[in-house]
Image (cartoon, rainbow, N blue to C red; front, side):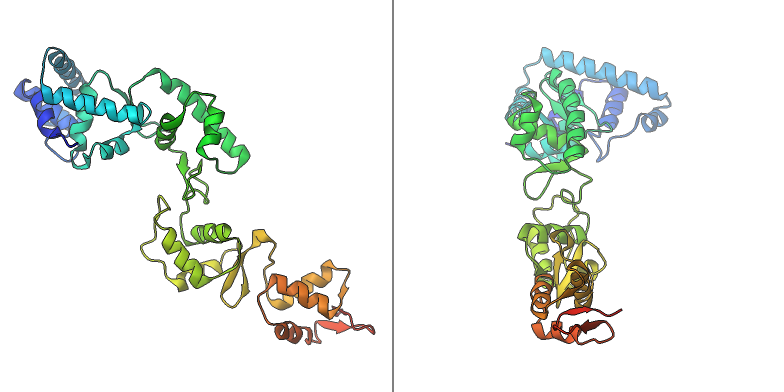
Length: 342
């Protein structure tokens, strides 16, 4: 349903005096794209910021009183639509998301003005922790704020995202279902990841900020080494799931260049990368062999070296054998076992 929100808002300020009407219109951006500050309005009308604030508050009180005795069908219908939408979202919603749901992105200033003059709607302005949001119940916000602090602490200790059911259990019935979802959306510190779970916005696995973070998520999800061209392709497919920081275009060579510079990734074959989290060690095939010998008593049979190196690197056996022939690094004892040359 789409209402003529600007027309409804204009009808409510029509009864104000010309000067007051201009001040209110400027303050809420009813005639412009942007709402004006108290200071800028004061400079136009040669009055102080505080006087502008008083005039706006008096005008809003006058408009609310007029609404009480008015039977304006459009105003009542708009208020009912707002209330029904908020109820479906658990009685609260972040302002920008609510505007989108009301199909009023190009009329957001008029919608906000109507919400402000509607007595049943509670305005929660932007803070350090929350984006601006609206609710039908005022008392739930205090409890929700306390839960928000506890949830942030829990995330910092657990260091892993949670699904909505887990968060709902932690809330101890303070927030449930749609209320919980709307609450999480309003937080500046919590964000939903591509996999539907919620975590701290600062976490790369929740809010990937570049090619490297996204490549890490791709590899972690597929649980196996991938060629950089495949990583590039999967990042492009995942773009719709990354809620923020989308790359305009994902080029395979860019992915290759980024991965080779990040210690989280290990080149295990020709252009194929794995995660160091999986136990893959960085370095060349020769470096891997040296590490294996050091970790296995200093000497190993050729067959064991090949077997264990193939776990770490996607190369041919002949490549491993070629590296073992480097007499400046490796030597064999009388039984044919290899060791690192002193």
